[in-house]
Length: 296
Image (cartoon, rainbow, N blue to C red; front, side, top):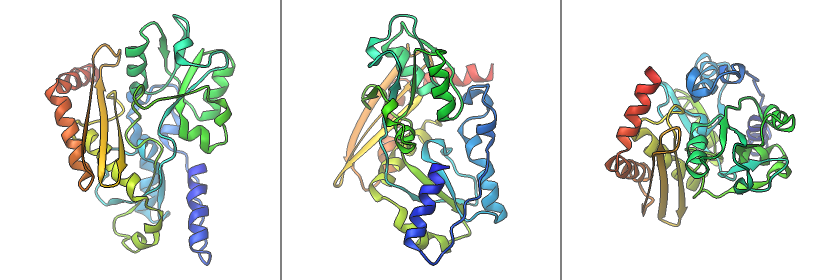
């Protein structure tokens, strides 16, 4: 809702003569909170009801966290703009410890993300990772009730909701490579509504869009979804781009990491190049094993 209100306020300021209304919706991903996302169908569960409203003409645009947007948009939909990125890092939140490194052996850490879990287990095999679902307030309440020694959340969400004070430690992107698109907002439209492209163009942040497209290029090449522990993070400086990414087994015992640098003119190609380097080191074998496990 914060994201929708943020885009609403931005559009209202750009077009004061236009009335911008919010059509509030609860998605399947918001409703099913007792199972890990990977088990109930993935991140697309946060998107499909909104896409139906676009298809029906009930809504003109939908606002998403880019990390929740599947790698392939369904036919008939288009991403009209990607806004400037908030902090892409993961945040360590704990009431008793200031750093991940301080957690004693056997401490329970909550996260709903296989990406975070695999990287945590690779660095700290002595920690116990348990599933944590729900909105931010629910997750923080579970921490405060003592169900977890610490939880890992996206820094962007905490900052947007004014909860930055809850962050004990911001985890460097080298230590916890973010989710593809983490911290960026995407605005999706019905592809037939070309009239909206010029209206929404001022909301597009070109550098963020290039970085997110590079990350999505990597994930798409590896058939990434939230059932696969992978992440990618791109940074652009002038005409130059650097992107790092990883693929891992859920337990973190196999973790492949690579990075590439190049000209930012074709960000998706850089993402595919990164995927190719990971495959050359065996990422396809890890992905095949994960696929077999998910079908078992």
